[in-house]
Length: 198
Image (tube, rainbow, N blue to C red; front, side, top):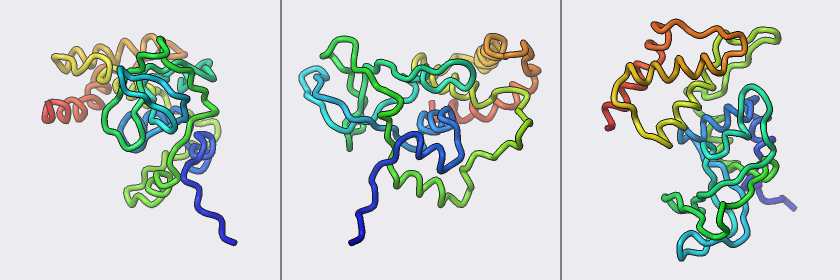
């Protein structure tokens, strides 16, 4: 007897299959490549009851996806997206949202196949042992996703570059930060894309 194909994989299984870190999975989810899910007991979002499998936003759970330093095993989320829905709903009852554990996060098996089959090769390059990137650009991109989600687009590119430089100053383990010209080159295509869609 052939067993049915699994619909979901744990975060750990998903990351292992792609040879990605949890932070890579979170960044790609924030960027819209795929959704992260969990199961919840009944809650109220306004007057709407929500339960079962729901999407959770990785940007709300960054304390579980830090690239450097300690990562929490759980956190509270105050918004969810019901399966098949397009809008994020704020949890009003219980007050303060629900606790989501790292071990309970799920991703669609179909999304793994999509990433694997992508002709553009979305697999994160494997860095040889001992070689580490000089600057944590992945972490900076996660910070930008969160910034856009929480506070919108800044009014100028100069302001955006300054925020990225400040992030490096606060998060660099060595105290070293990229040259402003390097940051400008990294940010310029993002800024152009944001301006075109604004």
